[in-house]
Length: 76
Image 1 (cartoon, one colour):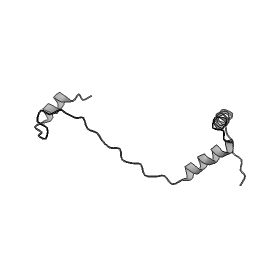
Image 2 (cartoon, rainbow, N blue to C red; image 1 turned 90 degrees about the horizontal axis):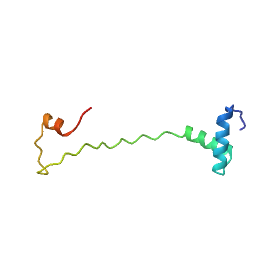
Image 3 (cartoon, rainbow, N blue to C red; image 1 turned 180 degrees about the vertical axis):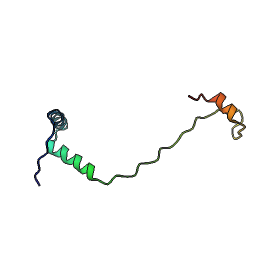
Image 4 (tube, helix red, strand yellow; image 1 turned 60 degrees about the vertical axis):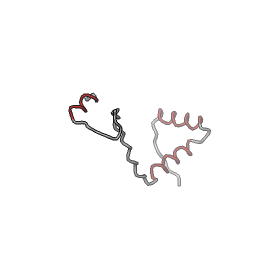
């Protein structure tokens, strides 16, 4: 199907430059963009949380309270 879309001059120049750099046509890049926009969105993965590590003299044991935490970790 044929359609008309108005693209600002500066944006079109950037698009045309990108197409030339990738050795593709402007049409291919536009169609790729439309396909990506219409593709169902995948669920974002939950980011793994990493906690600050506090060295221990006796690994496997934990004897710490809030006061000790504030001594070891700087809080804003």
